[in-house]
Image 1 (cartoon, one colour):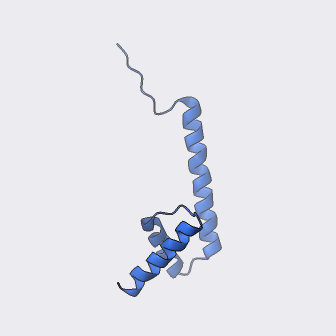
Image 2 (cartoon, one colour):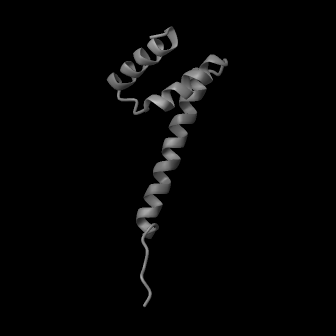
Image 3 (cartoon, helix red, strand yellow):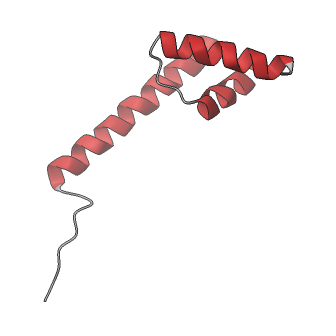
Length: 73
């Protein structure tokens, strides 16, 4: 296992222990973004914002019945 893979495995285990909810692919992308010098707190804020927006969309879809198909005869 190369050092990058080991680093990802350790970060993924921490992610699971803290119930962050990131899958390994997403965590790998985040780690790559952080390696470019992005502020970790700013990245965390973006992830939290995206999760809230996703939940709003899911909530509005469930209220409006979006995704349901009607059959016309």
